[in-house]
Image (cartoon, rainbow, N blue to C red; front, side, top):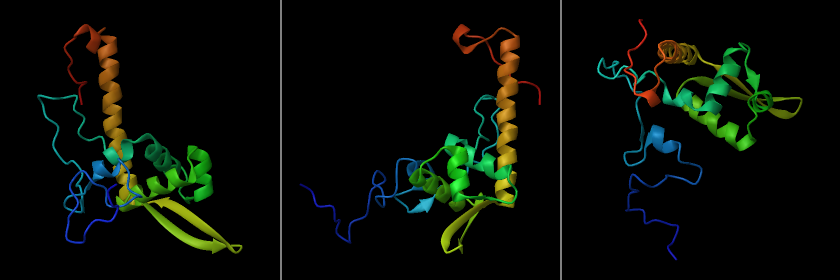
Amino acid sequence: MRSAVRPASSRPGPWEFRSASDNFLSLLYYNTAMGIPLKRDKRKPNAAAPFAYVGLDRIIHEHARLSVLTSLITHAQGLTFAELKQLCALTDGNLSRHLQVLEEAGLIGVSKGIEHKRPLTVCRVTPAGRRRYMEYLGVLERVILDAEAAVKKGESPAKGGTHKPAPA
């Protein structure tokens, strides 16, 4: 049986997690070999690949984080941890991890305090988070318009139709 303790001189490979709290999602946003977060994809849309939708923010696009951000956008005063948990139907641990990812990305702010001798965590969307959310919705709207245009023309990927993006 291998020891769980790695010698201090050895470095983890890109396939290893830094801690037990990390999960497979961290590979999408974190370069474990270098120990640095990955940068957002800022590539310009490619005319040869109009359906690549490079503007779909991978951090926001995950459905639980999209639920959390949408809840926070619609409640300007912020929401408590318990309120978010109920609105998004997430477990404590799952919500906690998603909040951590959103906070590390600068999309939300989390403040912890005490109210009536009990811990209280309040989450609010940041101005940068609001801006990125609106950019994300713009790209998502483009996806919907492109799909709607294809349906109106009677084309579908299954029929092998030639796709052209909807006019901007």
